[in-house]
Length: 77
Image (cartoon, rainbow, N blue to C red; front, side, top):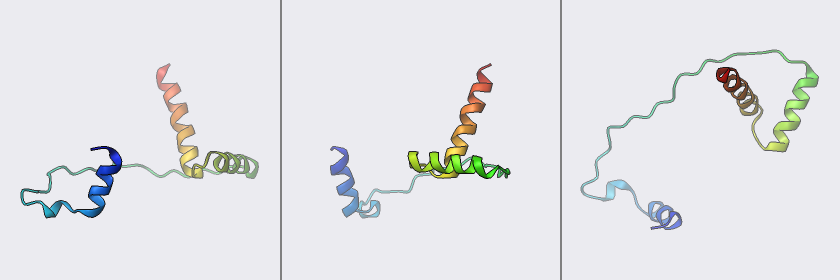
């Protein structure tokens, strides 16, 4: 079954329709994150907003990805 057929199947069916179906014991949880706040110059925010629009990525996600890239570089040292 390809992805489209599988998606179509599950659009029309629910797992509960199958007699042997049981909910799995897996419980996925996100690791806890901490919120930080920072103050930036308006010029810097305009640059971030411009890059956010060009890339189609939310402002916070863009800044988070830049921070993660920098942290990755620092960890490789």
